[in-house]
Image (cartoon, rainbow, N blue to C red):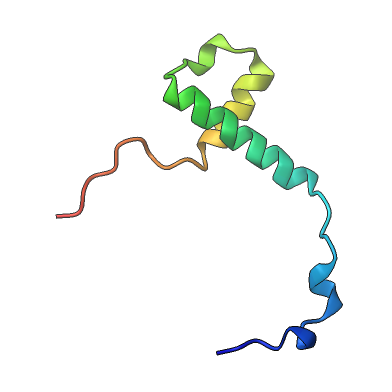
Length: 69
């Protein structure tokens, strides 16, 4: 099915801007993913970073999921 490009409103072309909440979430998930990959203990980091790692780890999949049978 072809799309009529002229029918797309100009609102789609406007940037939504940066969301501080999403930026923080992406940052925390990235930190948690790196810490999990390197198997770094969260307890060794300062409290603020440890909390960010815990928040980010919440959104990561469990490291070992059972395979479907």
